[in-house]
Image 1 (cartoon, helix red, strand yellow):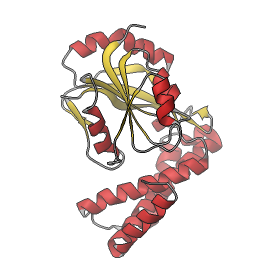
Image 2 (image 1 turned 45 degrees about the vertical axis):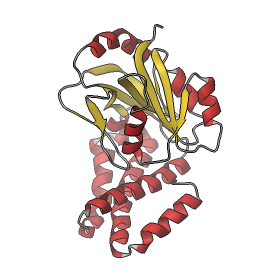
Image 3 (image 1 turned 60 degrees about the horizontal axis):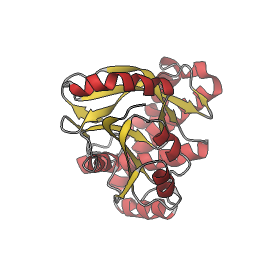
Amino acid sequence: MPTLPLTLVVITHNEAENIARCLDSVPFAAEKLVIDSGSEDDTLAVAQAHGARVLHQDWLGFGPQRNAAATHASHDWILALDADEYLSPALANELAEQLPALMAGASPAIVLRRSTIYMGRPMRWYRPAMGEKMARIYHRQRARWADVRVHESLRYEGTAPIMRAPFNHANNPTLAHKQLKVLRYAELKCLDWLDKRKPVRMWQAPFVFWLAFIKDYLFRLAFLDGWRGFMIAQTAASYALYKRMRYYEMRNNPDSVALARVALTRHKIDR
């Protein structure tokens, strides 16, 4: 497959099990760039063996880390993937055919559809896991990641074309992995809220879990995916509630921020 003047950028930390699949799924990228924040496994060696240029960047938070990574790319057009994401062959072919014309135009970004693999199998009905639209290809002079610690997204003006074929997300190999990620992401989100001095609304807490669960389980069709759908809805609802409890603690016991950072770092949940 001919290469295109585009850089695949992947931010990593201990992703030796995933990085090769991610890199190999983008055969048309003229450059593959891995920005690592201190892996202790074989991530760097595996990435280099699969054609990536590897650089180190101390962890800045998801949005700032992606923006910093973009400055090291050799090309203005960037495809951003996580290490546990990879293009389907159908999407790789679609992009190889359509990118030359799109990259020659004025679009700031290109939207891809993400399909989630959960508990070893694709989700079939749960809406956020079926073709979730995400801007992942962009021109770095026309788009920029939001400067947030977690749940970052691209900011740009104008419209972005949408590809039809999906890319895949191997979402957490076990429930244990998922719970650890929930703990980390909740901490990062609460720190963003703390920076903004978001009001504490604990009166919402008794309702948050059930409203979030009903939204995902019923209205987003998780129930059609059986027990896996129940589990993904329950996890999402627990995350929504825990964030609010943890933020209440941060505001009412400021010492808990530093204490939690020490514990999360010690157990390698955060860095």
